[in-house]
Length: 110
Length: 109
Image: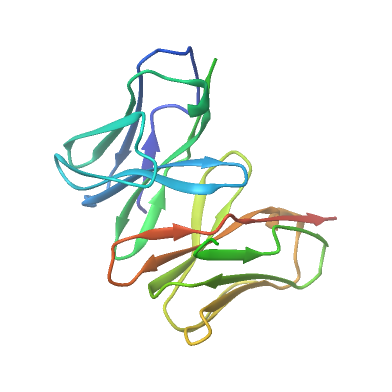
């Protein structure tokens, strides 16, 4: 079974802090994704990566950056956290149109 | 207008009832997924469809490509089926995965 893990289930940060969310997959997938999920808005794509060091902006990249130095690891960075970034963050890896999701990180920015 | 629309948004059923959740989309697709998300966050894929019908246990998913419509059916519903069900499509031509906003299902014992 494909396993996608995320570094934290719950995270509380203060406004202005730099926040790192990490995602690791164990199936050698090339494509990885970061989403945020908010009530009434569903899942929205922040960034995706189709190879090491390659990244593409999704629908809502503002205020975020990503890093993919190794194939199995895709990191989401909030350069200066703001309260409107309080959300559930979900990572996924994909192969053959099949997405595999991590358990999610619920981030609260105070 | 969203490119992927689900109905209903919320659904409450009694245990044992037959449940249908609908998904309509307005884009060309390569594949359609039905996903399940339990409280706490994790999302699992139930079905991937590009045509026809699939069945897994008490769950049945159908798709009509001409009408751009898919349905997820749950037979003999159970409280453990309570979750958010999300329809998502891979668009054809462009590499894009578009989600519906989900249907929140609650099955009462």
